[in-house]
Length: 90
Figure (cartoon, rainbow, N blue to C red):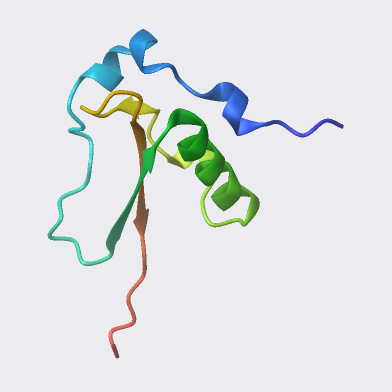
């Protein structure tokens, strides 16, 4: 059985209408159990980082946003939003 490579399933921002719009689907920041991770860099580096976290069982690669362009030429980003349960004793 061959392993699927998430890097092969990256969304090209030039082909995705959603990537050209602002990110408006995020939960509010007033929730203390929300953690956002943002990976910013060249397309290959960002996708490699997401895939490595997937291999480490930190987050499934489909939990990240599609690849989005940043204002900087050649730079892309993907964001992950996770709910982290906080112990009330902390």
